[in-house]
Length: 298
Image 1 (tube, rainbow, N blue to C red):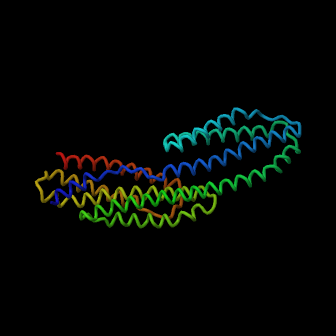
Image 2 (cartoon, rainbow, N blue to C red):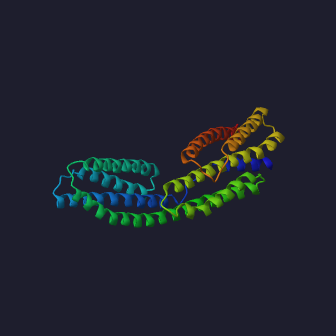
Image 3 (cartoon, one colour):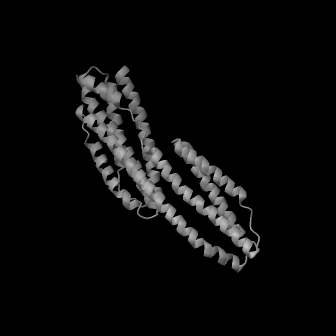
């Protein structure tokens, strides 16, 4: 009976999961980028109007704006199609286009401009900044709701997995601890979005990524610990048992090295550690799948 349960646990141990909130997240990110594009285009138009009023030269921004519009349109399509790879690549391209436009504006500022021109731009810029802030507030509200839904779906999915394993007799205490941290993360979402501070939102995303990684690790470890006594009672090769125990030791080492902290002192350092943690996790997962296949079909 235990061998049958082990087989069922191993067969169910797939880590594929597509969070249903992804389209909502992409739409919110698109809305925020649309605010930035709107401000950039309005600012270009303001400068052109001021240049005409003051009779000073102004650079031709049409190609810059065309590239920005094209990428924004592609970004919207990627969001609607839930194409996360294309969305990410297009977002980078759009950021590059906006940077190029900004540099062109800086360079143009030194080209025979008058004090009246700068006064005109400054007077009109304040209203544009107010519009940008209002737009971002709405976009951030969308992003906050989308992020909360995303984390809620992840927690529900993790709870379903945990409950199924617990019913089969697996010790899920490590997984439950990660879920508790996830619930605390959920409570922190409003504060992270309270002000338009990208660093705070980024820190929240980094913490979420770490918790997802740790849940995968705790899940693999729990299954390994569950499997060993069943394998020992069966007629399995001693080498397989040793490999499972060795893999679990490696997983526990990674869990210790990737210890979760709700305090993110430096986003870059936390992100780099996340990359290392995920790389180790995928290595462990490859070994886990190999051993799972050997146990089930070897």
